[in-house]
Image (cartoon, rainbow, N blue to C red; front, side, top):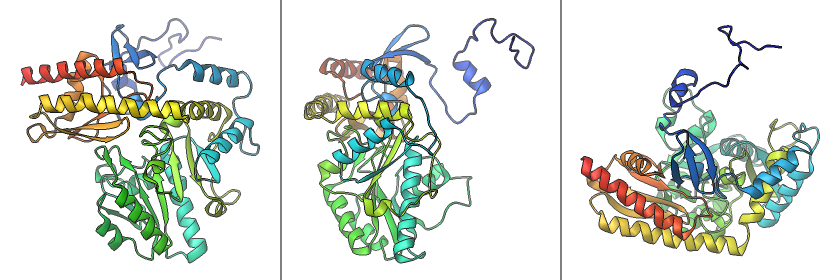
Length: 418
């Protein structure tokens, strides 16, 4: 049977030619992508439609932590694809049970809930926290405290909990009983977390907010205050978890255990999956039908995530991440020292790092990213004033050296064009 498009042309006659221009013609304009269209990747290397190679230090925003087209993950996915793809949640499946066992054995948690994204994991966490508080203390204990400049997802609930007004403008009325406090400010936390608070949510390392690590004292204070006020402490580790900061999850390095933890991004290395982890006492607040998802925890996603977890969660792998972090920070500090009028400092944790723009270059982080792309290096921004650098966790010393050279070339070109 011949399939025709709306103009009567045969869709099967020849493949459509697509370019970056096609995006503007057919896509809802929620993004402003680069002119570069990646078509192939391997490890940290990416090639565009013209065959040009780029060194990827974005990892798909901290997602492809084991690199593009990782052969171990590809083999696992293909094997599962030939076995069973999907069952509805009237049934369970073996891959998701193995993944849940592995995550609970590796963390503080007793129970896991799987979904498709970090936003959905956070949505589940916020709903669970409110229901737990309502069931245990009454409906007036509903307020959620978050941090300014935080980011927790793009659903209406999660952008409201996130501390960046630019993501909520035009979407009122917003969910209520949500307040925001300055990050790393213990006094503000003590003042805000009162008896009506059901949960406090924090990123151990703020990513979108500027690549800012929490201080140990701040997270310890949040834990103490939450205990005093019978509020749940939620760690959003969607970006900073899964080995990104040098431990399986950041809470392990800080020595502060949350009540609920959310993960996604690198959990599936690009295959969509999110997870909410919590204790058995809190988890039993949810009952059959109180929350759910069609695709969450399907066999394909769970198979990939389990293999990712098995690779990352070894002492040798995490030691290599910490070594790479030291090498990358050394490289970046050298660039800051040589270009002090462009960059002010390096900050972050593990392989979630940021170059902070100097006063004379405030608001120009995107210019640096564009200049780097022109040299063949893919970087990210974290707001207007920070260049975000999140390579795959398998990055080599040679690739770190190459990235440093390309970034220097980019800055030289930027300065020359000024």
